[in-house]
Amino acid sequence: MGRDNSPKERQRRQLERKRSRRASYDRILIVSEGSKTEPNYFKEIRAEYRLHSANVEVQPGALGTQPIQVVEYARELFEQGDSHKNIRPRVFEQVYAVFDRDEHRTFHDALALARTLDGQLRNDLKQPVEFTAIPSRPSFEFWLLLHFEDVRHLIHRDEALRRLKRHLPNYEKGYGRTFAETKPALQTAINRALALAQGVDPADDTEPYTGIVHLIELLTNLRK
Picture 1 (cartoon, rainbow, N blue to C red):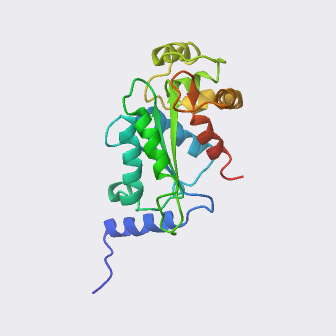
Picture 2 (picture 1 turned 135 degrees about the vertical axis):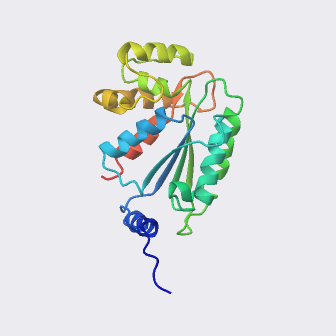
Picture 3 (picture 1 turned 30 degrees about the vertical axis):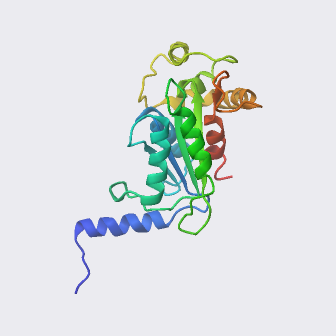
């Protein structure tokens, strides 16, 4: 039987060859609670730092916006892949679930599940996989606000958004230039977020916190 040379099959083979030519650094899966804002932000970073798309996969959660659903989908996507999204099963060394504290009732359950999964999954190379929750308290917008203000106490997510829009008047959910417009103050935000994180338990609802800083440091240094 001759080789299938249909346009669809040629496209599939080309994509497979492209994905097989991944870079030498770790393969990373990022799954976010937000359907647009966070994925757009991380895709901006991927483009800015020229990270290979086969190494850094960014997807919104598909089971719901509760933190536990974000963690469960990250596990499901890692284990089963998704042929419609051209994601093969178990092709990552690191998995990150990004979600907000807000008033979510499953926040602490999500943190606990992520800790349980860390090191328990195996990838296609039979290696243990790092599985990490990336929570923000109160919200992703708090991380962005740290680029402009040194906030050292816990504020409501609505307050974080209101104050952020003083500095980024065009910011809305799904905005596509968030990283570009905050990058000049990136190191300032990193320093502030790391200072806040010292000695703070991500599960402690009394203190502000954003784990986004750890993911940013990883991505911006991935090729170094």
